[in-house]
Length: 584
Image (cartoon, rainbow, N blue to C red; front, side, top):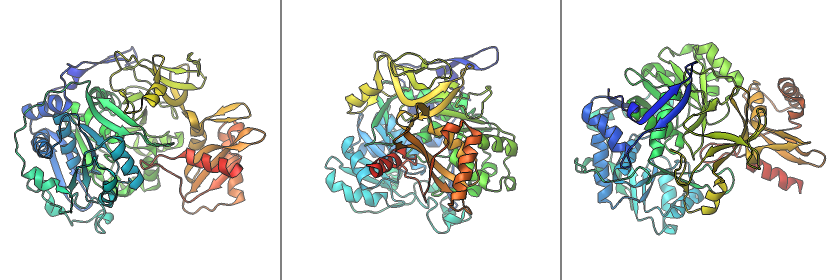
């Protein structure tokens, strides 16, 4: 192997072996697709890059040589469709392997990759197409999102090219949902890559176009500080913001893979469970892992079934795993002992708070610690339990030393240990920190709200203990002010989630004439439990025993489902708004 990561990342460790300093190194003309992926392909073409499969039985194993071959052809195909350097291309490809071909191709062209989820509806998609002046969309034919695009296209005159990808089964076929189908097994193997065509009026067929494209691609000059990828934020309130990143974002995720996921290049396979419409996909299935020369696993499924996912670990020799706490909770409900998890060596989580009960369960069943991490659409990994650290259940870990970070009061002064404040990252506009957003595209007001006085203000609140461990409280807007107390919803949610009756929950503040706001818990019950006054009393008493009594939910509402964004994040703002309107 090339040990490429050592050319781009340096770290130092203290006397306890914990990482205490990180720095990145790169040239101004660095391009991750050429200088990492193609570099490996040219010197070690048979090194495994990705193991890919779907529930219908289709399987492919791609080497770095394969990735160079197919991304070069894809770059030629997209260039033939008029995609040029600087263009923004919306990509909705679920977990299809064509996402990786397309992303690499766009990086090689110098166009801006704009991933999006397949769960978008008309308003969501039209907003994205118009707000970013998207002229080209690369979209799956699986599910209904192409239909959604057809309905909004007349309202988006700048959208001139629609490219359709036949994604095969994606777990949506009746046979595929069982996890035992062999319906598409005939598509397995090198000769069947991009074999399925798709004819759809008004669309250009990706698979046939790429198969017929030229193989040779000449390098396009690019600069590392030019725009490379843009995500739409999750939009828990208002329209989502457009988060623009440059090429340092790809390299900054070397920290993610090397020091948090603890990936292994030779003999290792990393599995991050995330759809490519979410930022977590490039966190765990792309940039850092391939800079580490590690093979990743991608499973192109539709609905999460814990037993099905757990079976993949032995089948594909998964050595490192990352998924959100929700998925670990669903695995907890399965029969863990019925699955061979012996290949696993390291586990991580992010996306929401990891409650201590789940932390202890996983360690008891697998012998493995779950190492929590934190970041945003706007950032790579910024807080984490890095390798060789000792996690404290409930804590996100410590500040990642690639950045200068602090927890600040509203007046900009630094919080003392134990004081809740906003997580902030030092930001010099003349020399921005590697991997942190360039700006909110076309929104200077929001950019200034977030980046001012020498800091990037994350909008997330936390407190730090005397050993420098950081404990998440919640989004600024989510913090509940009740009877003079500042109450973070995350702690109460973690306590409630440890109760067997609670499958999902969201804690918010509801207007109260005496307290200002009272704590309310909106709960989705686990199977077998009923909403009764007795259960409400039991849950309230349970919280009082587990945390400070003033934090217990005075109001508990039971619902069938929680309001969520298209990216799956709970929209506490929707619950608050409904309560405020009811109180008027």
